[in-house]
Image (cartoon, rainbow, N blue to C red; front, top):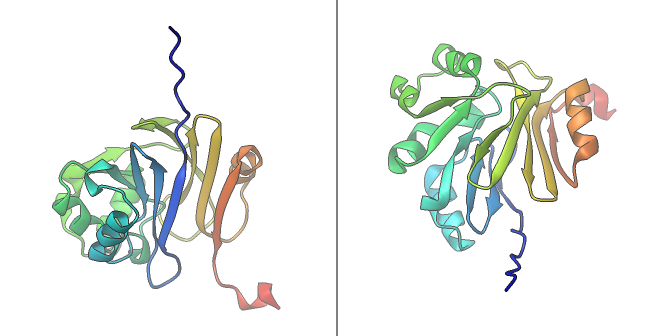
Length: 185
């Protein structure tokens, strides 16, 4: 007999976006990842549970860059969930050590990623790509789950050529840009 498997449904939940803190969940019913960790760890954990997501199903944190509003609670989350990994470029990790007072033990959780080289976390295929911002080695992420193509880019000043490439393939886009009063006028 042929067994039909239902395609996993992509889920996205934002816990905060802006200078006060950035963090989101993306995944499926099988688990997923956090994008950045700049929102209070307890709030993130409580919100995951309220949405029926077991924090143990979160494989890790994918970091867009090294600013504190994107990573302030990364070590707290990792320490409380030792099964999680921290996915960021080696240059981003070095920027974290240069710019913040976060524990150097965060290195124990680091899994290096590289722009334009896809990696797999659970049932997600994730590709980091170049974005425009003043952090260290800024990236956006193209996240694929079956036929779902989701792109997330934060703090971007312009749409880079590579961001444009991934955005044109996307079914869903989460775009956050820097505040610029001149642009708004």
